[in-house]
Image (cartoon, rainbow, N blue to C red; front, side):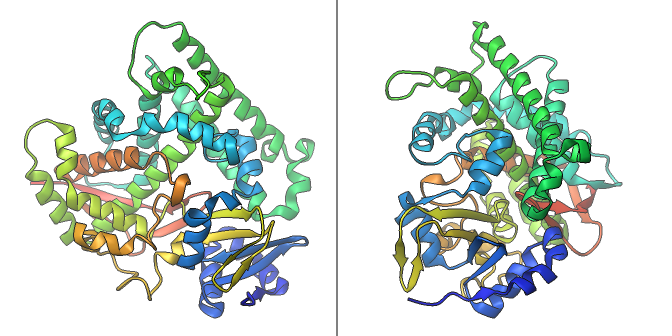
Length: 445
């Protein structure tokens, strides 16, 4: 068995401040120095294996996925904020809920949501002020949250509740990042009398408030005889194999997951995509040409014909995968090639590095949407994971692609794009979030 190189504790601690701000350069440095797999001990008793190896990744996520569970970072640390939904559950609990929720996200079901998506998108994009530098991540964050909310449940005068839910989920994510990146400060976060609104207790109160808002929405829907055809209707009507329905607590957990995963990842990808198109006006013109050729008012027909637009989104997710890492814990001893994966070992898979490996991609740091033309796409299946892989692949991948394609269609139909600055910046949180994303929108002539 191959010996996996361990990064020294001194080297890790000496870079801890930089790692807290952005761990990706430290990851890249170690991958370049030690190969596609290395390990590190961020604190006594904890060892994490980092990998961008395609064989190990497929083994963990696909071929022997039942032997690997999500780690406590996701099931407990993230779970305490958003409950135990599809993103944070393991084993049979996850399998039962995945089977129940999955049908709501089939393409044929999403057809019913496309019109409402389009309405929200057009309303939110009306905020664009042409000719002025705008932070587009703020626009797309609000847009994506409202699309998810409108697709989940219809409410009159819902803006205030949605704004509060959005604030709470964003605050919870920031608190979780502090816990994960500076674990030696846990004693401080646990003491509200010392840390006030920086404490875990404060954020748990916020989560309780979010859960109460969602419970009111569920109670209202149960007493409403109207069929809205949204995701909440579908989830309330779905049953487990024994005929029972999902409990309200479980339903709230799943909704919180959909809010976190559904709005955050989509807004990030849209922000990076628009910046990349602004940086590459020749590619933006190809998208505009495709949009200008659309005929009729059938949105599903439009989505089928936005082939190059989808390639832009796929290439964006290669360069800036929203779920840039994931982790798993080995349930039992296992072997993959010449690598031992011992029981209890933690494995962090870096999609960010895998998507930029020079031995896997031609010109890996360049924006080339054409690499995802239909005849080429199959050659990337073993090293391209924008939505994860295996049975735990993101349940909302079709939802996200529909939404993002509609957003780009509406933007590029009316505007040319101009990037403010030369560099596309990012901030790795739970997802890979854009930073200083400023773009000028110029009305097309």
